[in-house]
Amino acid sequence: MAIVTFQQALGIAPGSIEVLSQYSKALAQISRDQEACKIFEGALEVFPDDVDLLRNYGTALSKKNQHNKAIEILEKALTIKPNDVKLLGCYSNALKQAGRLNESYRISEKLLKIEPENIITLNSYAQNLISMGQHEEALQFFECSLKIQPNDAITLSRHANTLASTGQHEKALQFFERSLKIQPDNAITLSRHANTLASTGQHEKALQFFERSLQIQPNDAITLCRYADTLASTGQHEKALQSFERSLQIQPNDAITLSRHADTLASTGQHEKALQFFERSLQIQPDNAITLCLHADTLASTGQHEKALQSF
Image (cartoon, rainbow, N blue to C red):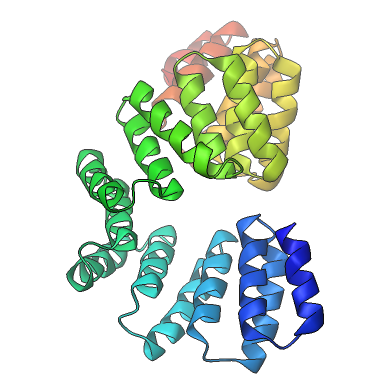
């Protein structure tokens, strides 16, 4: 409905920077990133120095994994507004996604000095702490954030996901539920909620949330892999294999998906094919202990005991 309204507004005011910016942002929020980027690019030809356009364009590029281009766009925006909190938060996030963790952390520290009680600042810093494995410290910053804005759906979701990462599943589920009451169609939150449900053995309920997430973002490789894993856990192996295959079409070199796919193939007696996928996974992550163990087990099942012992 919102998209249709924006389209009507553009028909009335086709050159409105505000309408173009909000329309592009709305497209990005429902994962129509390609369309959003085209509109951002067109708008920036007319308004090349508009910071909001540059920030939203950089964020959309980052979602498409075009991290270097996103960083370039955000750096241009920062030459115009060097202390803009939203902009610095997006920049920190883009650096983190590009693997430039130390730079991202430094930007987060700068943000904290500028606005120590801003939830964007607090969340950005928490996300960087998570990247460095400091989950307990990150939880403290999310809690500070939620004292300021207790109904911020994104913060609730990130807090929940961090709780789940530290094994606090029941508490995590409560925060996911709060987040989904506010943003019921957030695909990432739906997927993370589903994954936490699966971790607590609530597989049937988890499948429902995975399916809701995939209706919104059908090409999310991580969700497809986790959905497949949960299907396999409930004995739906053929359906699981289809979901693994879809995930691998999107991210063909994801070592975890290759390994989980291989394990499911082995469970259905397709040992030779499973071995091929285990070998592909181990080429990418040769020291993954779980994959090595599963690979060895499958080798043993095919009578290749000497090779199995080497893998162990």
